[in-house]
Length: 506
Image (tube, rainbow, N blue to C red; front, side, top):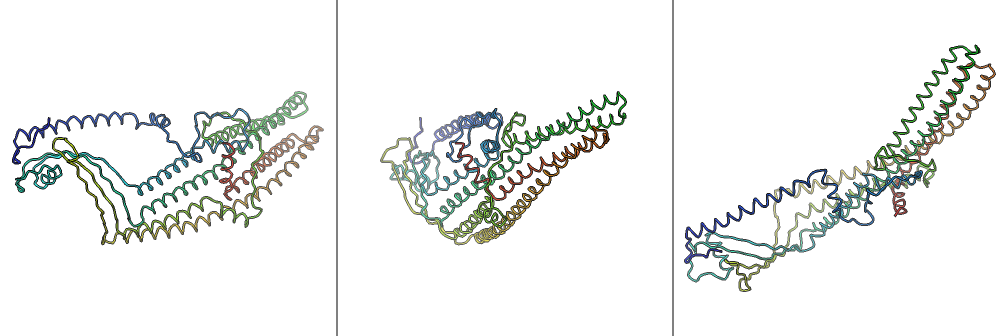
């Protein structure tokens, strides 16, 4: 029940007390209720244990070209994984890729937010007001259509009013800032897409490195096992000959020392293999203890330019880092225009439709509306606009310097990659010849040792030299493949390869 306004604008103490009491009672009920609801809402959602599962149930749909696949249904293939399959797994599961996709989604939302500036804003509102201010009394009572004919304008008395309505606004001109915000948001999306391409370019090179490190470690295990088996066989023979008095005890001890060294090399090779597998699993975004089987060194086709000069042209047109910094230059130029736009006026259209009544008895006879055009023009802002323009211009200079730095960095990176690839190819040729020579030397020494013309020390040295030569040749082979992967990264080739790999997996 609402208390009526007393006659002649006078306020009775009991009436004022009832209205104030009613207002306080409502506030006393609503505020604790709101605080309780907020407390319940904040009890669980803001904990880590709650968030991942809750968010997975309400994850927003993203565009098909950037949608991240489900992680829960992934299983490591039981069949041997090729290097091409390893690249696809990493591209679809690596956390850095997921982070890049999330940043792209954020940028797309920013474009939508910038587009909202071109639409009108409409809001509904409700208001309850009471008091004895003469101006408020007059305006609200006139809007109600209930202004008494004999009101004292200096002391009209107490009033109360309920108001509901709609109000809208649309901007007609603000110096082009809304258009610039939209263009800057679109540029930001391009930069985040280039970020993803840069991450993919580096990720693929890292996967190839980890893949070949694992294969190299596996080959080292085989070499170490063959060495252990060879020394164990020779030790059994030499112990029999020692029992027969044909060799010295020092020969037996030398073989035991060599066997211990071979077993140590085997343990080290196995540890390196486990660590390499764990590193590859980490790039896959899976548990490092996950068992995996790799197929072999079949390689990834890389159609690269033959020489550095041709490669430089390719890299300058392909590296995502260069494209990004150039987009930053474009965006910084927009920032200059954004700052300059503050010299221009703002022009808005506003409208309002509302109804007033002291007893919530709304009707068409209580309706009111207003509409108008508002022009705002800051004629002097304490030179703050000029300062923002100068700051934006300095950012352009910074981005231009960053562009030069990025170009030089790409050039140095590419030159280094070409030189290291040439070095790796030369080292492979040398180590393969060295391994063949060491194998032949071991064969001759073993024949001499079996015939008694070579000592056990000579034989062990030859066997050790053969194993080291095989290890160097194996390492050189995989180093060449890794150098080729690094060259592809320096060219920016893997960023383009990623698109084809993901398209082929859809």
